[in-house]
Image 1 (cartoon, rainbow, N blue to C red):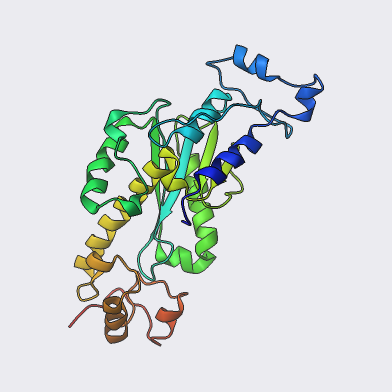
Image 2 (image 1 turned 180 degrees about the vertical axis):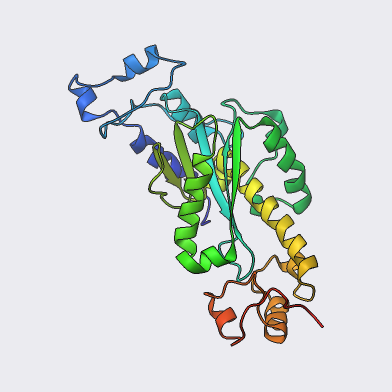
Length: 270
């Protein structure tokens, strides 16, 4: 989502870890006190900001996460989605909580859209194995039609984060704010290319959805779901106009509505 935003993300993180006015006045925890509580999860309530931390560049897309952990806000989870734009198939949302230190096994981790399918498939089981916790949530086409894609995305992220065990102390989301999370959070522009936990969530969501679309290709032959994954390619548009929408098409999408045909489970080629 968006372009890479390390600078913007780091600036936001600096703002997000300022010392609270109450703490400066002696009514809250100071950075010195926070350091003395290293190893313990520190909860900041009543609108207080956690203590100031210094941003230090870390390897493996870990700069933001490392800063938040040093500020007592770990563990840090990332959340991302796959499938906002397609006119067919589900929206898949994933949340991932990685160990605090970089792992050699995840050295190739990056925004899932920049990785080849083979690399994503290779990373998928590794992320599942080394993550402290991960969760994948699937929002079907009918639910997207009922509540809208943006609401579905927000709701999916809430469900994914709520399913993490252990629970995170902080959440980084890719691109936009996610209201209603039980812990503090920060939207990061281009987060899947600048925060390892978001990149890991991106891979989990992308691989899960791609596999589902391959299965749908067998269920609904003639649409080419395995190739275009439900996006509005020329091939998909031609098949949609020729065969009509399936039960997996999003009828709230204009190109699906304009076919003038009712979705049915039995729609198939031939």
